Picture (tube, rainbow, N blue to C red):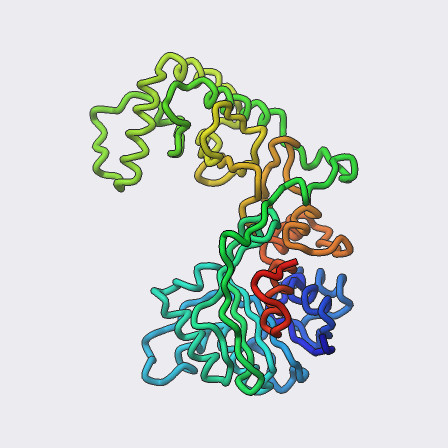
Length: 398
């Protein structure tokens, strides 16, 4: 790789920075509207990002070879379609990418976004993005690449859109083909810290009340009589006889279906469930979402939540098989590792996003979790940069 200069738009905590500098790139400009992200970025890379990109003139940004950005997904208005793409994109942050591209004409562009971008606004959003980039003089694939770290052995299910662009006078992007046969196995153990090396480990352990609550739900799963473990959400307040005075048709069909399934499970296990509910309601945490359970760990003869990973979600306690974690999101709440009876640490979240051990998360843990949940995965950013540069093929992920 020849040395190159890049800019890091909507930089967050520097997932693109990590990837590009590992390939010999020099970051000449970064920006992010979030003050805490800018502090974390400056602390790790000795470069203070600018703030609001909408207030920065393209002429004030240094020349560069590569533009990187994980821009927010926004819908584009159809109202002014006859006025062209500039009108369609105004008011969105993608417009700011476009004006910088138009001024600087970098050789390459690498963008990352949520999976929904591919189908957002019935495909209109992607069509506008594709056609605008093409109109600015870039070759790119007709559809964005949708990729997740768990495809290549990083234990996080996090499908994201990657958009690779090459200036037309430089070359083209080869068709990207990645099949299930190329997927690598995942192990959550690959990113876990030993409990002994975690400062303040007790801070991450779940409470005795939560342990008791999970034990109660384990007892439920292990004692109900059913042909299969429930694949539908278990709602404790619906584990009862149907109320003849309640008109279920007032609810959406999906909710009617779940209510009837919970009722059928109750009728088949009436004596056990009645006794179980009495004890469950004595737990101070058994209310709201924690009084609901979503078993999504497959069929097994011996279900055990402690052998899986689970999350506390608004829809209930969601249990997943322990091969890879659900996507990190920009909230404090992270997955609970059943076998460790604790939450993920910021360092483990950094590993899920492929940040090196030298990376220092925000010292404020809520901010650290939020920032890592918003970050681009470093290894994926590096891989797609290499693919865009024509240095690797789709089956060459390291």
